[in-house]
Length: 109
Image (cartoon, rainbow, N blue to C red; front, top):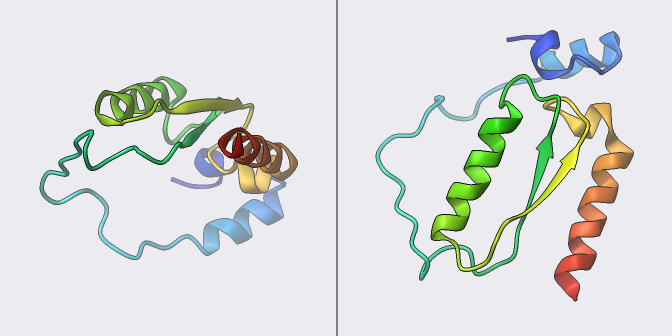
């Protein structure tokens, strides 16, 4: 996976620099089973920023994961769609900041 996967809408020099800093703190994957229950999960409201142009985690999978969260959460997941690649913090920072600010305002009500 490279620039075209993570940063396809980011200016090439910035994308290459960002890619050079990608590292994993742990092996990829999940070991074991993560058990979430309504009693232990989801009491804090959350927002999923769905990136509609994501080539790493396709939008359909993002929507499914948000729905699966709702199956075990006490509160529903608020989904905000942004027209962005996998890395909106580089490709659409203003749009991402607005989505985060809107989520914070919504949560404070």
